[in-house]
Image 1: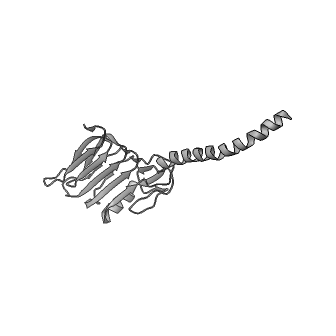
Image 2: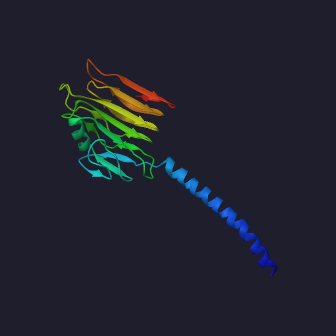
Image 3: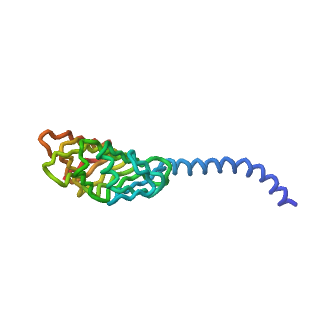
Length: 195
């Protein structure tokens, strides 16, 4: 009987603490997922689109989105190409260029923009594979994290290059034209490394 009385007196205390603890736990989960509620986007060879729409602006619809580089080139041939990481996923919001982006035939002076809520990894270069044809694009890379491209080259054929990130590392940046565009690199915290 004594144990039953102790148990009954404990129930009101439990019932008052449980909702508060549950709310705190739910808030912690919400904060964690909301802070990283983005989609990762990988730019791959070919025409594939996986978990991303097929026209600029390219917005992912689910985690692990893949965008074929040919889709970007087609967009640049008629206007600007914008790749975003969007909100709603459970990933960091990284953009990875996993292939070269040769804008030959698509370089009509339009703008390529990469907007990442996480990092941008440039594992391929951006260039015109045919020199002397006066094609150009401008490139904007915006990352809430870092831009990492230790072996990547960005050569625009006269367009401007803008990189804004916490830190940036690329192999080379060149506008490669007598009337070349501006190169602007801004980091809010980290270093700028151009090899």
